[in-house]
Image (cartoon, rainbow, N blue to C red; front, side, top):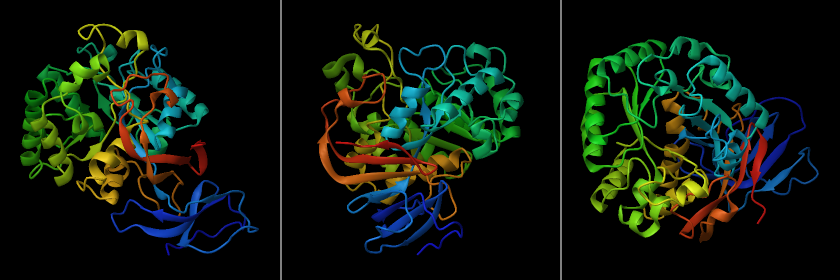
Length: 423
């Protein structure tokens, strides 16, 4: 159906009789996926029994969906500096359990990701862990102090996994966790990042004011400005109008902003405290509309782990942030696909192909000759989110016990199984 790559007769793995959502936007189809040496060797019409043929492993995909591995362009692994919350190994395991094969780690670590030595250490340890393609994001300013610009050219030249996959040493630049208020310095950021072809991933706080500022900047520069975690109707409306004329501005949202409202904070306490905070029903509905009409380009998690002790503090003292890698797909499938807001191929685009496009990553599609970054999904599974089984070190989620549909059964990174559900 989709051809094959000529090579050795021995195949590493075949996924049999699986429904393929290939990330190209077409209708799902049933096929066999052949994998050899970490590459998709063939996507062929489903055949009968293949036992006895040259496959080292056969996965029965009947009733399952095969999709491109998810790409999350906004996570916090807290490593280095805060590894009691999460680290590269546990974060990678959580990503794999959630169906993610690529993540972009934000720079608000200690030290911040602001010089090549820090960047290369993270990259080395992520490669050794082998659970996920970890693409780091550079800070805008040294130590995220808001004064001295990071040497973006040096970060961009670093010999990282990101450079192998995108042609850039980092996936983008960001001061995530805070907003760079100095407009003069922000213009220098946009000039230098634009020259290098790096997206500027901006934490917009206050959201509406900084979103409108970024729209103004997008009119003045060709730099790619990506606005993180959109949560308000006013911001969605402003972006909808701006994107009609500005191809260089994009945005993301997270599942908590289309699932919950501010009432969750009084009901659930610090596990529903995040930044930007949850808003009212009108804002939640606007986020859903923005997802449906394409104003919101992709879904990210803003995975933000904290210790149980930190989240046990009173609401006004507890830190902002919730985890999201292991809840993202079931929440999105339940709230967006099961309700008819998106089709399944549209959701896969929001979680795979679209975020890959935003960072220039050659992933997010299932194609012969491409890396076998694949997630297998059981869409018929219904259950409740159970934080006790998370691979993350953290448990700070407002979704524990929430009924959802859809579960990840396998995640493959370059043809290697990084997660397999055993229950």
